[in-house]
Image (cartoon, rainbow over all chains, first blue to last red; front, top):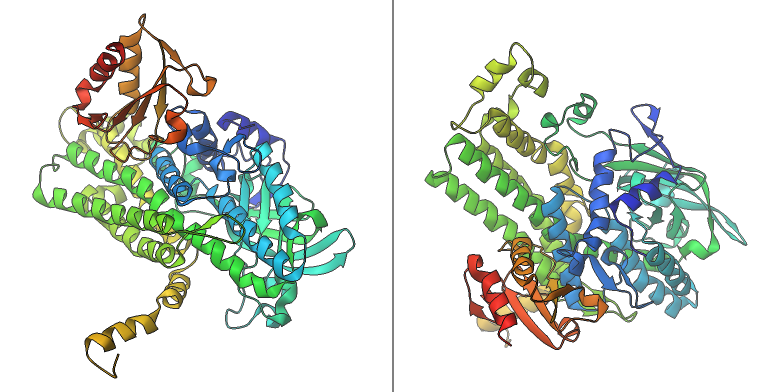
Length: 481
Length: 97
């Protein structure tokens, strides 16, 4: 059964997670001003499956049941399915202009599908069967899963077991016959407050001393002991003002809406545990999840860039600069950078390979290259957007001033661009550019799916430098190569 | 004649697929029925792709109807057709057989 966006909203109302924001409990993420845009963005992933124009990307046949399911709950079984994922993300980026959050859990499911298989093969455990049961449940109920990997980490120079506070990495504190108890937190959790399930994974490779930190499991989002603290974003109090113009992207917000998720001695039933102490597989889980997640950014961010490029064209037309050579050159560069990112996501998908578990895994070198490019190119795309739009995006009067009975007409008069185009239209598109290129959006592009150094580590590891060295020695006629 | 319209997914369309589909429906009114591809009743499937990559032109899609007509950006069955004339060209192809 595939929900539509409205059914998804209703399904969230049935959950009662403990969520805090600005010191207050959020009773309903569907209705609260801080979280509603992010709910709308996630709802778009559900509506995708019901729109004839997009259903070919939004739906796919489950390899488990044969039923049509949301692609966000699917395990990739071919390069073309990985390509379809990237295209789906671009389509959603175009429609929402922001992060729509659901890919994190999708990537967690795919990573755990393969790693649980590997753990069982070596250790004789039964994690893969549990994962399949869980996956069937997720597919059948069309759930949104938050893939929770990043721990707070404390002192980054120390491993988890050497931290002054052992809870700075999520870990097992008690083992029972029917499950485990965990304590710790996961930071920067995109979409967690409007997910149905939380799927935790270790954030680092782990050694024997850190076996209690090599833990992976899934829980309902409102499980006892889970506490969410919803994070701030730049301009977030604009949502309190009652208008929509100054928000830029009023319907879908900016980035995904992230939370600190605290696990305060939370019990996890055994059937929902997918790793517990098998530390030698933690690194593999991290690399697979990270690679799947880094694959995404050339899709979703290309879609977001499509919106931003369109906004630049629109504002240039409204300001009478659209035909200027330098404007067209800057727009060209924005397209070039965006499509380069898209190239990377397609490449790592097409160069994917089959794992022993039967699903397909992206090329990690190309996936990490794609994400590293995102950490640079989005900043340049944003810089060009701000260059094209002009400084007014940083100085424009508020919606309240625009609509003020006395000064509103004056604001309209002096914010006018090209004659015949309402000043409000120019202001609206300027606000969209302002919010899409602001600090929160760029920080997410930098650190989402792992920080640049994490990508560089993976790139260097995959670079096959010895082969490259021998190529050079051979052509240089050195050492009989 | 029953006609099904199958979209590619519109990840980054170069033509206005919904507009082409609407025009096709309007021009077929009274001359052919529009059915869902999943119902298994289609005689012809018009595969509407937003660009030449034609992601929806696949065996599993073609297998659901006796005949397929493929729009891929500004082309019909690989023949270039301007976007403004796509709907007319598609309908002419459908009604000619």
